[in-house]
Amino acid sequence: MTTTPAPKKTRLEWLDALRGFTMIMVVANHVCNFTFILPYQYSSSMHFLILFRMPLFFFVSGFLAYKAGLTWNLGTLRDLLVKKFKVQTIPTIVFFLLGAVILGKSFGPTVMDWLEKPTKGGYWFTITLLYMFVIYYLFSYLESKLKWQTCIPIILLFLVALCLYETCYQPKYFAWAMGHKGPRNEFVRYASLEQLFMYFPFFVYGNIVRRYWNNAQRLMDSKWFFPVIILIAIFSALDSQKWHTMKGAWAILPLTMARLSLLTIVFMYFRHYQQYLTKYTVIGSTLQYIGRRTLDIYLIHLLFLPNLPTIGAFFKANQHNFIIDTTLSVLIALVVIGFCCITSNILRISPFFRKWLFGR
Image (cartoon, rainbow, N blue to C red; front, side, top):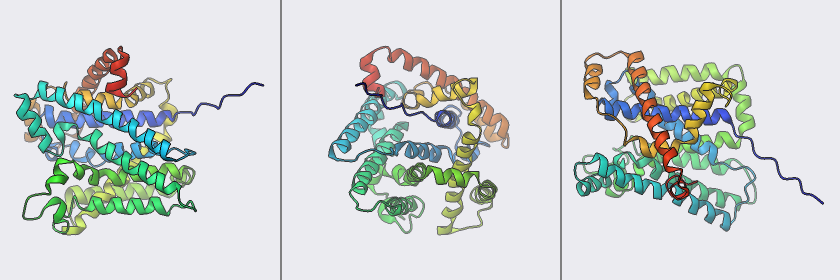
């Protein structure tokens, strides 16, 4: 008697392409910050793109974190946690130290300076993502023990995540975390928990969309949903970026709505045009390749960013150049990503490096 193997799960190619697009946006923003030495508020494009760039990255991570049909037990929980610890921590430590050697003037002081900052010299992302996976895996394990499976637990997790998110923007009311008329909480700063608080709602949002994917697709395909999201995005982005009609504690509302609506629009765009983003198209195959190498590119790209402050000075003196600003940032980002991919492929020749630097 022969056993027919289970069919291999089909990858969502457009989702890999979306990850690639998001990675390009991340590197383009770092080009603006570290290559042009241009604070985002002076950039015509990054001031807007920063609204959904990292929220979208964590949204996709949360979307992919949900595994339908996975049997949750202590063994599964242990295996997933061990795998994530290995994939997220070892490469981060290696490239963090390598970055301190290459980018810092003096190794020891650079390491200490980066450790004291929540952004960890640019290597905060993998640390924050590890926090999110640990929380989500523990949540999923506990959720599986409930007698009735409902949407209530994940909704409650989303509400808790929003409460943590509020601490980043309401220091007057959350002085224990962000500080108000005094120093910030040292543990929150050293452990990069501020980044966890800032982006965890988007991770959970992506997870909810994946859990209820059929319902989400029906909603996205309805005639009224996209126009409503567009209007919300326009007015909330304008208010958070230009009008500032909401003051004080209420200012966080348009900012949050802008982030949620804009990332939803980008997500819907890639889903709608998925036929042009397959591996058989140049754009699709390129974005998918970058999307499958996001960890490699993220860890390596900081080492290759050029130093061009004169361009930043030009954009600062000549603002409202959205097309030129965006095009130049993206073009340099693509060159940097190309060098990252070459470096990654060289390192991946070694099974040892492939396993311990990139987790596969």
